[in-house]
Length: 80
Image 1 (cartoon, one colour):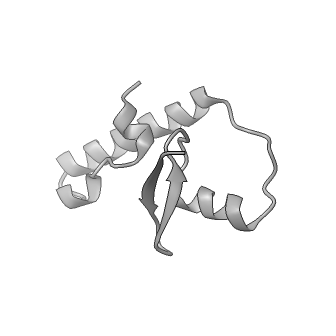
Image 2 (image 1 turned 60 degrees about the vertical axis):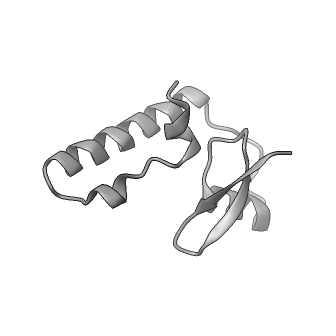
Protein backbone atom coordinates (compact mmCIF):
# COMPACT_ATOMS: atom_id res chain seq x y z
CA UNK A 1 0.00 0.00 0.00
CA UNK A 2 1.38 3.39 -1.02
CA UNK A 3 1.44 6.02 1.75
CA UNK A 4 1.90 9.76 1.94
CA UNK A 5 2.94 11.82 4.96
CA UNK A 6 0.35 14.27 6.33
CA UNK A 7 0.84 16.82 9.12
CA UNK A 8 -1.34 18.41 11.80
CA UNK A 9 -0.80 20.15 15.14
CA UNK A 10 0.28 16.88 16.77
CA UNK A 11 2.85 15.97 14.12
CA UNK A 12 3.12 13.76 11.07
CA UNK A 13 1.44 10.46 10.25
CA UNK A 14 1.33 8.20 7.22
CA UNK A 15 -1.99 8.14 5.35
CA UNK A 16 -2.93 5.68 2.58
CA UNK A 17 -2.43 7.46 -0.74
CA UNK A 18 -5.87 6.47 -2.00
CA UNK A 19 -7.66 8.30 0.84
CA UNK A 20 -8.76 11.94 0.78
CA UNK A 21 -8.46 12.51 4.52
CA UNK A 22 -5.56 14.07 6.37
CA UNK A 23 -3.54 13.52 9.53
CA UNK A 24 -6.25 14.15 12.14
CA UNK A 25 -8.70 11.71 10.59
CA UNK A 26 -6.00 9.08 10.13
CA UNK A 27 -4.98 9.42 13.77
CA UNK A 28 -8.61 9.16 14.90
CA UNK A 29 -9.14 6.12 12.70
CA UNK A 30 -6.05 4.51 14.21
CA UNK A 31 -6.82 5.17 17.89
CA UNK A 32 -10.62 5.33 18.09
CA UNK A 33 -13.49 3.27 16.75
CA UNK A 34 -14.96 6.02 14.56
CA UNK A 35 -17.11 3.63 12.54
CA UNK A 36 -17.34 2.73 8.89
CA UNK A 37 -19.95 5.26 7.73
CA UNK A 38 -18.29 7.35 5.03
CA UNK A 39 -19.22 10.81 3.81
CA UNK A 40 -20.05 10.96 0.13
CA UNK A 41 -16.97 11.97 -1.90
CA UNK A 42 -18.85 14.87 -3.52
CA UNK A 43 -19.25 16.50 -0.07
CA UNK A 44 -15.55 16.07 0.68
CA UNK A 45 -14.53 17.54 -2.69
CA UNK A 46 -16.95 20.46 -2.19
CA UNK A 47 -15.45 21.29 1.21
CA UNK A 48 -11.94 21.08 -0.27
CA UNK A 49 -12.92 23.53 -3.04
CA UNK A 50 -14.38 25.96 -0.48
CA UNK A 51 -11.26 25.78 1.73
CA UNK A 52 -8.91 26.26 -1.23
CA UNK A 53 -10.96 29.18 -2.54
CA UNK A 54 -10.98 30.78 0.90
CA UNK A 55 -7.20 30.48 1.17
CA UNK A 56 -6.72 32.09 -2.24
CA UNK A 57 -9.01 35.02 -1.37
CA UNK A 58 -7.29 35.54 1.99
CA UNK A 59 -3.91 35.52 0.27
CA UNK A 60 -5.03 38.06 -2.34
CA UNK A 61 -6.37 40.30 0.45
CA UNK A 62 -2.99 39.96 2.22
CA UNK A 63 -4.63 38.31 5.24
CA UNK A 64 -2.34 35.24 5.07
CA UNK A 65 1.15 34.65 3.74
CA UNK A 66 1.91 32.50 0.72
CA UNK A 67 3.68 29.93 2.91
CA UNK A 68 0.30 29.22 4.53
CA UNK A 69 -1.42 28.23 1.30
CA UNK A 70 0.64 25.24 0.26
CA UNK A 71 -1.97 22.89 -1.14
CA UNK A 72 -0.15 19.69 -0.32
CA UNK A 73 -3.22 17.83 0.86
CA UNK A 74 -4.26 15.13 -1.59
CA UNK A 75 -7.73 16.60 -2.11
CA UNK A 76 -6.14 19.79 -3.48
CA UNK A 77 -3.50 18.02 -5.59
CA UNK A 78 -5.96 15.87 -7.50
CA UNK A 79 -7.78 18.80 -9.04
CA UNK A 80 -10.89 16.78 -9.91
